[in-house]
Image (tube, rainbow, N blue to C red; front, side):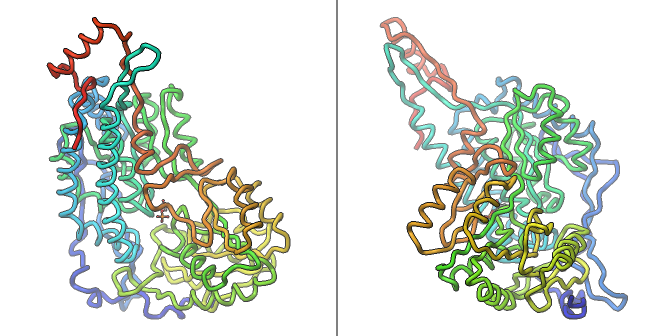
Length: 541
Ligand code: G3H
């Protein structure tokens, strides 16, 4: 295996960091948001380390970015109490506001958020190693998601602003909030994926306790004041610290109504079990995945290679939707692997802010060791590293390793690597691949590369009941955000999209009455005298 010295100029010297991306002194964050106030935490802090190291005379030195509060269970519970009070059993200001007014608050937050683009993007690079282009994309995509959510809610509200008449019963149906939502996002999209649950939860009238991901924590700090100033007290509360201590207490309290979580299925299952009334808990979960890319004998090879490289390696493979195993028909497996490795060689390693960089250091301590153990396990069982330099490690950086030929005896065939290791499995019969998908504990997405309508049509029908999305001649991905994003088995619970998330964080309530003159008069008076926020025919422009 190549040695670390094959990555000689990876980490910069301090004075090589462009001025625009320097961070200054380490940030010691003590504030957290509870009940409309930024509280100061006097207890222990958790150190925030960057995946970026600096090249110094003493060797590579990991950058310490600062520290964040390590709240205890009591502090977390005080945030939840604030959310419970703001919801006030559904009678609080926020859950009873007219939709147009809630939209106004969220728009106010969005304009404040946009002002923090530079700060958040910079921290995305420093905290999780996301390259500049992708960090900007994450920020902008999140703002677009908020705009799309507002438009979808207007649309939903317009459709709810009419009465229906069925079998002599007059009714109006509206979506209303569920209660207190706990929102927790993943470290690979610490802004975007968290906000795709947080914003729909808020805009539908729920109150929220938000706990940032394990990495990408400081980048929420520039938004704390915007949260504080944009919403009524207690509507959004932001806590920090170990999930084991804080989230355990929240779930055990039984006062959480919605659990929005992106992480592992093991953690989700453990946390859900802590809730004393699980039937009252609605969950929106994005969990593990091992999405296969299936390259058939007649595939357009250059396209399959291009999609597989970005599918497997964008953000170093740290995407739940990443292609985590490639099945390639044996007749083209050699050519595919060579072309894949050639394309991979053109990806530039470096620091997140460098122009054109696609391979960056990894934020999880111990991740290079874990990936190396997958590689050595595969090598022991007969695979080889097909690309020059594959598996080279320098501190937090792991140069992608393409493993060929991989088979079922190897750990990487089963485990979700969530990093830059690419297993390629040659196959002879398509049934081998079908069996893999059927037996897999995961069911998020897959990609099919080929041209034969008969075979592709048959495989679509086979896989449609196995995964949430089948991508034809394209990598797996979540977007566009209007499309459903979900999974089967251990990969997800519920469906998210702009449209679906509004429904996930709400429930339909019906006001119904017999259609007779007295009731017509009653409803008509309520409408004309504007006596209700629910019973209204206001049209939202
Ligand atoms: O980590 C999982 C993300 O939802 C993937 O989103 O396909 O847009 O990268 P993406």
